[in-house]
Length: 431
Figure 1 (cartoon, rainbow, N blue to C red):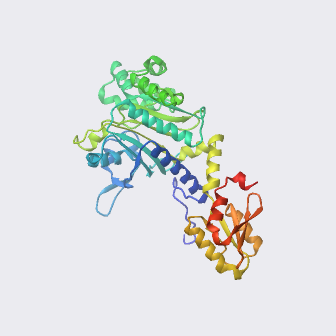
Figure 2: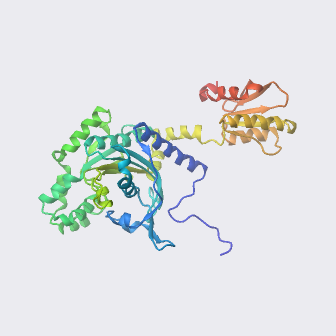
Figure 3: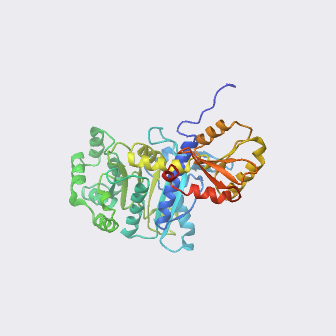
């Protein structure tokens, strides 16, 4: 096997320059939206004690852990999600901060599940949480972040919908129908798969609880079952001008056992993908993680990079917004300095350094290259302008690459001249 070509592991990704730029586009958009809503950023470790996830994870998560024993004999896990780590962190440090805590994290997570479209074994998540506020206003603030994130990524009304439900409504329904408390989690797992499992399988599972698929669907389909929580939430989002994106949908319950109230998921309007974001209220998790020492209500959501990228690439408005960002931010450089002759190199290097110290992105030929090849390289780098340096000249010729037109700038004030050109919009440069 000495000559074998190594490849990345199944479900893990390499990020070539364009892929990395798209990742940065998502991260910068997420970070900008969170900060615009008054959230501050934090970070938790990639590796945690496995018990942190087994204590209250529920559902399928415990079977999807990347877990192992480290050299110290500790059973540890690469984090599959961030909420449990946040609960640990908040339980330890919440006294140091005024309430509510409005925190966000952009971090890498790992789950051992079958790789497929919109799902891998490693992924990045945007996690947004409000801790220490039990009222609906916190849930509304959270939904506002989720909706604004979609709009900031270039989606418009009709591209996506936010389906909101209430775990308490299901708990009350289950109690009325005689489902025992110790089987509530089992029941919610069944409801969570209503759109993914065959009807006969669902019917059999519900029958074991004394329920019928028809009865459950009737409960979901009755708009009168909209909870008081949802009506208050809707009024809040309406005041913000964001209520048009909301939809009451009791089929949303979320798989994790720690949710206690409002839950929601963001879907593409066509319903062709899995949820692009989801979350809800988890008022008891921090108390559970702290052994009852800290009781802090909480609500939060997460958005992964896999599905949202797929949706962007399949939605014209969002794809156009992303490509526009990439055009401005994914280039190897903004300016390419052309060394007209080798005797001009020393002066060209001085120009390069001046521009770079001014935080302008610059590249240049490391070796002697003919003029046409340098211009070709400038275009390959997606530079906006090429500065042609000739030793001893008081003015430098600048080629606007989008229009192939020429202008001149003063050599002694090259930074100001280049900045003035770069500050122009592209359409101005093309004139």
